[in-house]
Length: 234
Image (tube, rainbow, N blue to C red; front, side, top):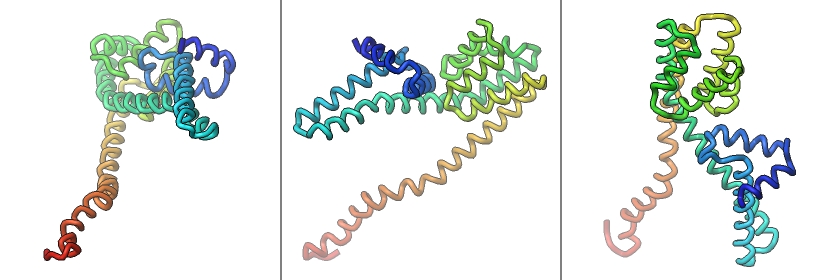
């Protein structure tokens, strides 16, 4: 039923920007639960109707109920965004190690396609391996390496992976050594990740300021000055 509802909506906007945005969000999240665009729009409609109905039953008024329905229709997108961020983090963690494996395989004489096939076969499942498996599938179906990598770059939210794809496409066009290019990329990505981790660590004191000011300091003030207001002594 949900899928049928979404299918009816998608027929109304076959090339609408909102539908393309949904496709991009699903691809970035890895199509969780094999969710399709039609099912996503179906769940958006269900969430909107439920949000509108709940507020309307509480006599919130048509305008407020409509606003609530619209906000509820965005909830599936919030879930997809969270799933996409989690998947992006997993890709970033796995990327340097996979690049090292590609360096070893290509340095041993394997072609890029054969190296990807070996890594996909031998590695534990993770989002990056899933993306490489899809790249391998596209190449076996007749796409060029550049086109398969370009598709992966469009699917992912990871800036590091997009950089890898762009560099590999350029290396294929110029005919440069893939092995040396991958080694440089792996080192650069590790440096970038270390810099991002350091930046997050430097932001930690600022983020701790809010709970300190609004939760810990008031409690401390109550303990120190409470007896004074109650007529006692500290």
